[in-house]
Image (cartoon, rainbow, N blue to C red; front, top):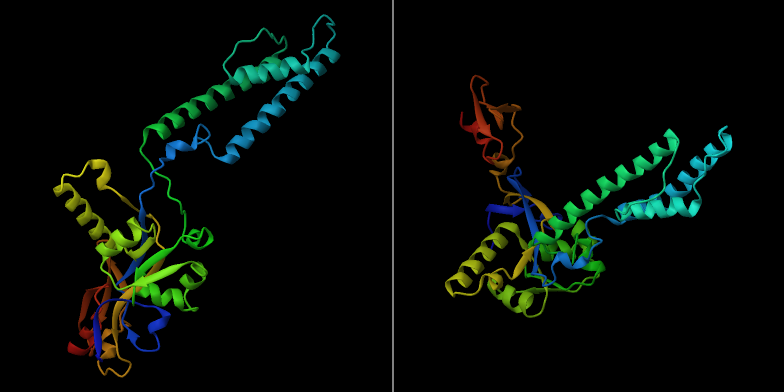
Length: 315
């Protein structure tokens, strides 16, 4: 079956350029991943979670460095001071003070010079701020009900060998098989299936039972999960078991979407927004300033209107 024009939000991918022409971009479609909701909460990652690895490494370096620095300062002062009765603080005592301050323990060390007191006080202030941040972050981390997804970006699907599924004949199938598309390189080597099933069937058969990742368009996913939640609510299923799926906040694939028409379609130029006018902003919104054929009249047309050029032919 052939048609002159497809009036729908069709993705502008390299696969279709050989068969059709595209009008101006209407919006950008996003395809996301639907997966089973992880059972393990993010709170299970332990007491190390409030800080990143780099922060922990810096704290460890400071613990090892501050003690010797204190020792060097106090020992050099005792050597250059005229009062020989001033006792220098040994290296083990300095290291013990650093460790004790971290655990909020008291100390019998009493630095006598102003510079030594300043170094010791600086470390106390640093530890006070550090432990305050750690306590606050740990409390928030253990309180919030957050889950850690097994994939952090699209490339994790292939690198971590996660199987995924999508609808047969969809843009995901075409893009993942075409080496001109970025998605081809991202998902290369991953296990995939393309099936002729509806969204509900894919969720039940492939995501729930077989633990596959389902790649679908974001609006469809939002509607699908909403309907799934409503249906489970009507069945009086417990609140915990109603939210059985998770959606990635990032998109696996993005593509501009617009109308498409046959290359020999004689009215094709009407859908190509390359107006003689220019783009202007009115009240924060973008418009084409489209002039009539004789140039005497001008009309403001929203940028997202694909038929803006019609005004050049009808006015």
